[in-house]
Image (cartoon, rainbow, N blue to C red; front, side, top):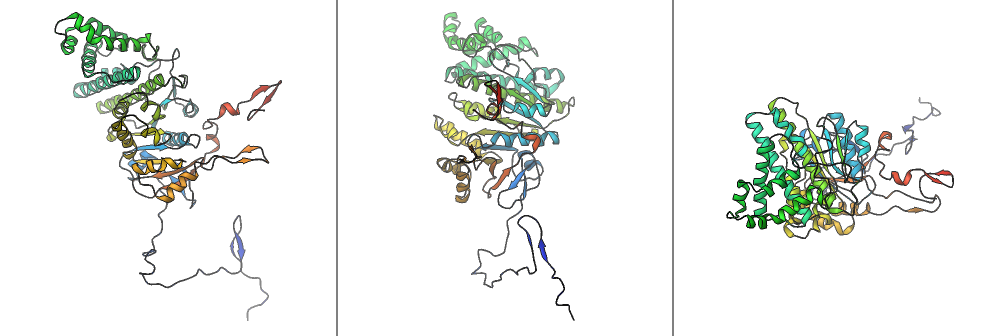
Length: 494
């Protein structure tokens, strides 16, 4: 006979949100036909979050770990059709932090991250921590030569046959497109069709004269002024010197501006200050360019983007020749809105500079604040092309967005009403705590929704490790100690 006074067998778990109990209640049961329980049948449950890729944090509602990045989801998980991501959200919620987490994960996997234009200098600490290369650009600080994109001319010496010709043509195309982009930013309008033809022919003359040596913008200007027969033939000057001068006058004026005598300063008139090292992570630091000078900043962004893509091109041609190992790259194009607003036709320039063959093993991320950045373009065709940047991306990461942005987002990717409410709630500012006298973090800081096609999004919260806190602090100027009445004041203004 059982001892009635024997201790009960406790069940359950100790710890937070746990406890012991002598009885575990059985779950409630119901019986129904498939017609009545059609919303449940066949009793499917939500799938777990993917575990392939860079660890990002926890799923907001289930607590499961999410691993996510465009390259691994393309190469290993086969969840997306191309290794690209579009990241958008209000400032201060962690868009750049997501990208830096990817950079850390990629460094472990041997993928080289390039931040092609850091307008705030916020990516510099993480690149330094990874042992990467910091290239500083700005008026009187550092220059970039768009006629030698990414130092690709040097690679021609190591190539032969068809591969050399292919890279040579790619360099010519990049030179021509970048020259058109810089002139567009300088003028505010596109070069004419005739000017485009003249530039193309002048660049070929420049190529014949310099071969694999790096020419300068002043060398191109000299060719336009010299008026060789090849250039005059496409200028259609009919053998009239005065007519040739009239035809090339505006083009000559634009090249003077880019040669160090105009608003563009000396950024594009000298040899590249520091060439890209294609074996290490790199960041182009352009925070020295004043934000009020949007034209120069946009031009610098375009030049950095072009240099990065050109360096990748050169590496892949050298790998195909067998003289260098094939490397995988992750290219980050931040502050997309700044370049798009700088002049008519800039969407085409960005589109050209970002279209790399996915078989080259290159991932890329484009970052901007809101869909309105794309919708605010003047020309309807530009708005459609810019929206295509979102539609073509393998994955879209959405942070907090105001309510007015959500219909625009839904035009590019399918977003449910529940997901819209979630994104809207993340856009609220932090609350003020009167007791502690500090403002709490915004509810959406570090929270993102991963969208792939029409699939339900995965909401997650990005959590940083202790070693990531300092490199990801973009408010250092607010935290830095300052001298006040002979003593140090930290963490704010007294």
